[in-house]
Length: 474
Image 1 (cartoon, rainbow, N blue to C red):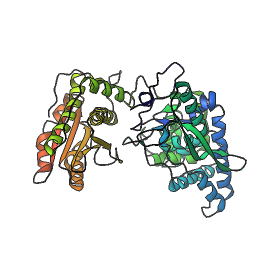
Image 2 (cartoon, one colour; image 1 turned 60 degrees about the horizontal axis):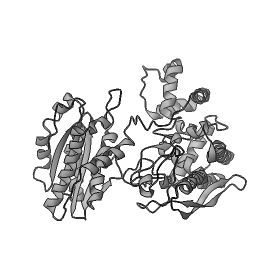
Image 3 (cartoon, helix red, strand yellow; image 1 turned 180 degrees about the horizontal axis):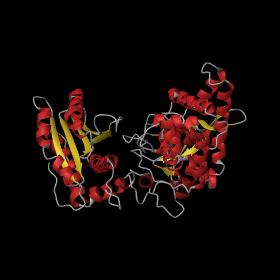
C-alpha cells in the first residue's frame, strides 16, 4: 500500500513528494548533489549543513592522522554512525523496509574513507560523495542514509507540513539524533509530528521527487566515464594496457587517489552539468511503475484462494504465478519490461513486477509473502507461506542471465532442501526467440534436479517478447 492510499491523500500540484510503497523498499536513493543543485523551502542551506558536518569529521581525523586508537578518531566514529533511515521506504531491501543500515563497522569504514581522502590530498570537501570514489564499500545506500540522517529534521519538517495540508494523522516521534550541532559538536534530539507506517510501526518521512536517483550523481563509474572521455592518455599511461570502459572499482579508486587534480576537474564538470532526478514517467529500470500496474490488474482479475491443505496451497501458488504469466503475455504487462527505445529491462524490474502481482493476491487472501534478505546475492527471490508447514519458493531469472542454469540446478534445490520446503517455482522471462529456444529443455532439467528428492521444482516460461507470437508454458 502506498502512503497516499493509506491516508486517502488526493495529490495536487503542490505535492511533488515521492509516494512510497509502505511495505516494500523502492530502489531509489536520496542524491545529495540534487539537493545541492536545487535546495528550496525547508531544504535551503542543506548542502552547507552536510559539508560543515563532514568538514568537522575531517578535522578530527586529520588531527589524529587516522590513528584508530585516538580519542579524536573514536569521537568521529561515534558521530558517523548512521543507521538505515527505514522511515524513507527507500533502498535495496525490497523484502520490507529494513536494510543493512550503517552501524559501528560502517562508521569505521566512513572514517577510513575520510582518512584516505586526506592522504590523497583532499583538504576541504565540496561534495561529501567524493569519498565514494576514494574507498570501496561506499554505495548509494550509505550516501542516502548519511544524507537523510544529517538532514533528518528537514525531512521531518517537510513531512509534517504535508500531513497538516492533507489532514493526515500524526504522532509525536522522538529521535535521539535529530540534527548535529556544530558548536557543541554533538548530536541533539528531535521531537517531530509524523505519520506511522502500519507495516513496521515506524514513522514515515517523505522526500521530494526531485532529490531521488537510482545512483548518486557523483560516483566511481561516472568518474571513470569522465576519465575515459577526457583523460584517455593518462589512463593508458597509468594502466599500460588496452583499457576498456569496464574496470574493477579498485582500479578506479587507485586512479582517483593518485590524481586529485583529475578529481577536481571531474567535480567541476559535474557542477556545470544539469543533474536530473530519476524519471518516474519513463521509469527505465522498472523501479516504480510496477506497483500501480499490478494493483490495477489484480483488482480486475480477482482470485479467491483456499490454503486449507497442502494441495490447496499448491493450487493457490500455481494460480498466482499463472496470473503473473497471463498479465505479462495477454494484458500488456510485457510493456513494463521494455523501454520506449526498444531495450528490455533488467531482472530486478521483472522481479518487482512478479512481486506486485503475487503480493496483491497474497494480501487479499491472507497469505504471507516475503522477499529474501539477500535478494540479488542469495539463492531465491520470494517465499510464499500459509503458516510454517505450507511454504513455496519463487525464483525468477531472465533467460539471458549467464547464471540462469545455476539457479535451476543448484540454488533452488539447495535452498528447498535446507529449508525443508516442498515446492519451488523457477520462473523464466524470455525476451526473444533466442531466449525461448534456450529454455526449451527446462522441464526435463528441473525433473533431473529434483530426482530422488522430497521436493518438486515447477518451471514457468513467461513470453515477454514484444510481438507476442508465443505463449507461456507451465
